[in-house]
Length: 178
Image (cartoon, rainbow, N blue to C red):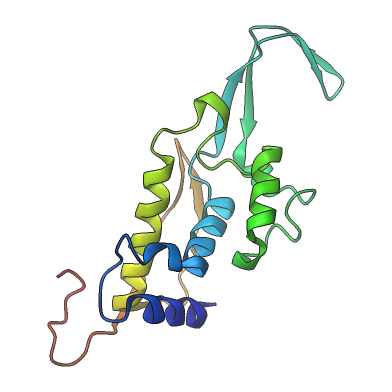
């Protein structure tokens, strides 16, 4: 998967940056971002208010009640995501994405009138950052280090130490920031 991501970034960007005229060509890169948001959705819990009395799972929920739901559970529901524990960017065909988004099973930025206003920018930003990092360095996890997810206000990792291998040509500075 990493080699495939590297190939796409190299083919699309060459030696240049992500631009408005090439970001849409980073199809696999965006799929990796999408699968990352499915597996490691930052807002792991959501809240909604019942606008009418409803029965849910045999329990009557009164109008006005606060409902807390888990994005983590939604994004790992085998009814919507085959083999949900597997990181699989290829599941994100346009048709599949449309279906799971419409079903409400995938909502890394919320859904409906409470959807995050910054969602379009966040997709562009995440795709740009991933492609830029992949174009410049290869990251390898430090061997023997266990990484755990921590549920706080958002899901985060306790640490993620990496070994950085620059892709830069010998005649360019060895910095990942230019």
